[in-house]
Length: 134
Image (cartoon, rainbow, N blue to C red; front, top):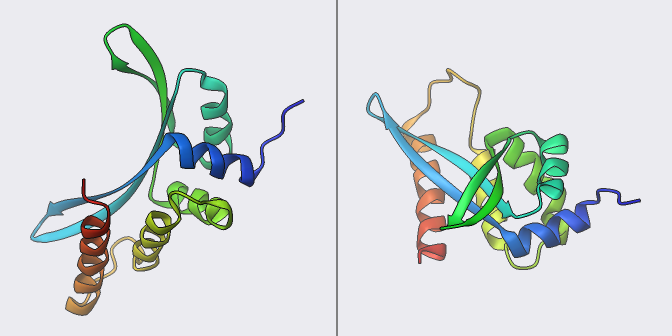
């Protein structure tokens, strides 16, 4: 019988996953969202990730006639996942560390941010973008 482990999840994510930081401007301010995604033809590993960390598993098409599924999770769920797998990541370790650095700068909903806090978030986003731009 197969059992979930953080080591398995790290290897699976290193090979099949991606980390994105998405800026969204609203009301004169920019918020940053950490998004994770993993695509796979077999839904079972994606459902295991969803069960443990939340998010959504949906059907997605990679190319014409190639049907696959994708697990997506953002913000708190993404943070929980990255904390769990970080000790075991090889390929995406640096991306995960920067994403977690950004998540550490997120306050409670409705908190008034100082200019220094906004700048710190922007700096982490720019570091991620510069380091991993393709």
